[in-house]
Length: 429
Ligand SMILES: *Cc1c(COP(=O)(O)O)cnc(C)c1O
Picture 1 (tube, rainbow, N blue to C red):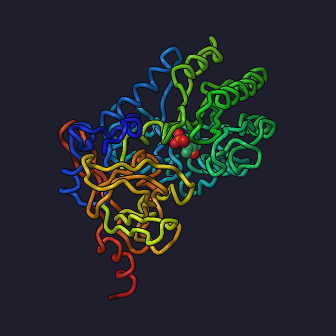
Picture 2 (cartoon, rainbow, N blue to C red; picture 1 turned 90 degrees about the horizontal axis):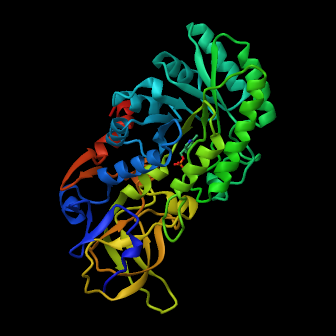
Picture 3 (cartoon, rainbow, N blue to C red; picture 1 turned 90 degrees about the vertical axis):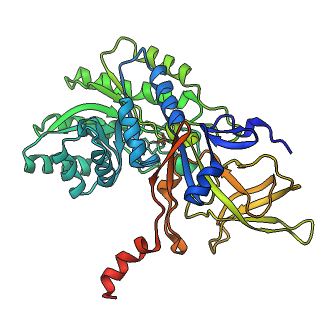
């Protein structure tokens, strides 16, 4: 059976002689070397996505701050650093990752509603580029800590522009009912308050309205909305140097028409006009999602005894490796690594070994499968490995970065010793 190319053509996974490859490296070869499950990423795909986004904004002074939480592997951070990216972080742990690859702290933006005092101090001492402040209380805390440390904190206020990103409720963040940011009215008050304080340097306005946004309108509405605030502030003598539009640029998982970033970039340039402002964006998924696959092997096939019952393909990856299907009912394409299977195509639920009915990777997929076959779960380079857990005491999967016909393990498979250590240490065993 021959599968159409459409299922994977927008991803880094390509068939060469009926065998699925990332760049010029066959996924079977990777599975033979590192075992399964394993995440595999493409260097050239990551690079191309970054360059596309940057080129879409050529007419606008801009800086791309890669959203570390989408995929925080050090090798990926290192790659984006080499391409000129700054970073958007949401914890001090992520800051440590950026510092570990020699990232410039001044290129780092710190987002998130719950920054602890320790995290704020760590970031201030490191000299990060900007705090995206999400509440009055946080602003007061940053002021107090900066005063104590005798330094100046660069700050943007995260505004919630109340636009509907038309995305899954769990990943929409720009509506009034979401926990993120403050209203424009509150933001105005916070800017006035902060402008009085010598420990704060107000540098910009921030927003981030959600994720997997495939329509340009919400993004452009948000931009227009925060520009109004910027102009109001300017009239009050509060001058800002940047506008941060956040991330959320959508990608194709199935049959979505993804955001046309060139059209979006052109519209952004028009809206910003001749204003003397730097544009910042915080893309995560756009850069990494389709650069990665989760490689997994079929353990058991459970064929239904009655035609109306389901067929299950139990694979060696589970919800602890890839949570998105269980958490968001996210669709990930699943395709065989070898296209020349002799098996009859049947409709399968592709499930993991975890003791939960919610443990599935994909449902109702027609595939020719035999036990021991390798399959690739596509579009898993973003919010894949980073959401992995040890549920059922499963070790987290390794990560592999392909470059042409070479590949490198950039995170080794977690061993049982890795997991037990934190408890054995405590129990005196
Ligand atoms: C998650 C997040 C991003 C990245 O979102 P993507 O949808 O992956 O582009 C950017 N900025 C902030 C504040 C975020 O929380």
